[in-house]
Amino acid sequence: MGHPAPIPQPPGTPTAAPRLRDRLTIPVLASGGILMAVMQTVVVPLLPDLPRLTHASAAAVSWMVTATLLSGAVLTPVLGRAGDMYGKRRVLTAALGLMTVGSVMCALSSDIGVLIAARALQGAAASVVPLSISILRDELPPERRGSAVALMSSTVGIGAALGLPLAALVVQYADWHTMFWLTSALGALGVAATWWAVRESPVREPGRFDVLGTLGLAAGLVCLLLGVSQGGQWGWGSPRILALFLAAVAVLALWWWQQLRAERPLVDLRLVTRPRVGLSHVAALLTGFAFYANSLVTAQLVQAPKATGYGLGLSIVATGLCLLPGGVTMLLFSPVSARISAARGPRVTLALGAAVIACGYAVRIADSRDLWMIILGATVVATGTTLAYSALPTLILRAVPAAQTASANGVNVLMRTIGQAVSSAAVAAVLVHHSSPVGGVPVPTLHGYLLAFAMAGAIALVACAAALSIPGDGPCDDTRRAGGATRGARDGAMEGA
Image 1: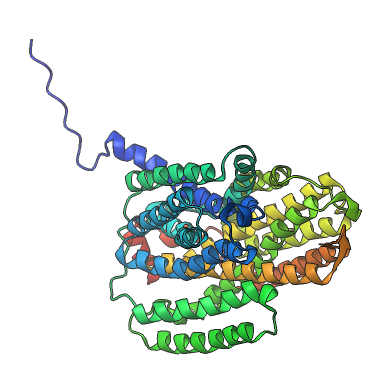
Image 2: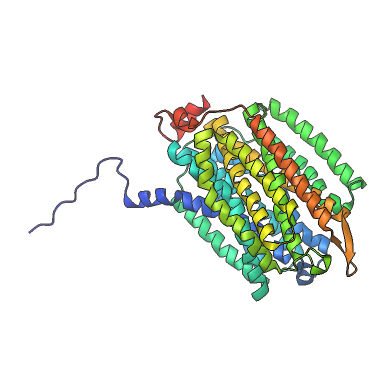
């Protein structure tokens, strides 16, 4: 008896492997975002001990953070533009690969020069979130896009909340290189999973890459962020800091002039100056400032010695666990943000998120002595951050053509980064100005912490006002605009028209 002949599949019927890859696209992209945030956070518990471990000065060790900040700020808009031109999955995989190579270098070396260079390589991972959001726009139908983008935006906070206690545990119970071997393995897994599970987007914007614009932006941002990040250490009125700020203004002004005249600019400034795009970037900068103060101040406050009268003297592991509820909240509230945006529009979600952040700081001002109130206030701020960060990319996706989504979201993430850098400098300045000796060591006073909370809360209210000033779009705008168009290039062409 002969074997039955196989029944041929109709043309276009997906096989099991493509169907599985489609189902894994969102989890794989989200895990890449979480891994990026973890990779940026894990070095924080090491900073007090690195001078001893690397036989380097504290000033040199601080460059392990500064190098990642600078390279991430420069590479995020550059890699976003490259993704729009050459393929988003290809550039995303390359960014994850650079992050993994940097982690391997950290695992193999104790030389401070190598560690700083490795951390600069890891800064490329800052482009993971905007590239992933752009892929989700190209690949998902409108009814699934909002929740996926909200989840992707929340991975930054989720990864940061997970990374701190994880790194603290590794540092406390194992050799510090073990942490980087672990992140290297996770990075390699992330590269392989991305290449296998994520489709290459068909939406491209061909043209010649703007090398001159890239160099100009890199020079301007390095001068700006180096001045902001090192101002407290070098002195805000020092010749070096003043020269950096003057150079930043001059270089960025020339860069703006060049971008307006370039045939294929790195950043489409005419698009940026549209109110819906430009105000979204302003709101991103302000929200980044307001959000980052929460992590900075909470970690220092709960670790302050009990002799201060307000400090709890917690270990770095316990400090990480205090921030963990905020990360869990961000994961839980990302679908809530998507539903609010679908019903009321993302600008309402952004304004609501900024207002919730301000409420969280009001809780911090009301009581920063009891641990449960500290955790409650930090979690409320994290909840507002989830709503705001989830709404920002949705605003950008609705305001720009599909062929420019990666570069536009890259600029938005850049604005958040600048906001965080300015927040770090401002909070440090406030705490240094309001400190008193405890055991012969200057320690910030409770009044200084409360001033920092008040400053961040006020900035959050300004972000709320900026969000409400964005020209509105109605609920379910994505679904109406898609109007039966297929996903991918056809959807992008329709929205870009």
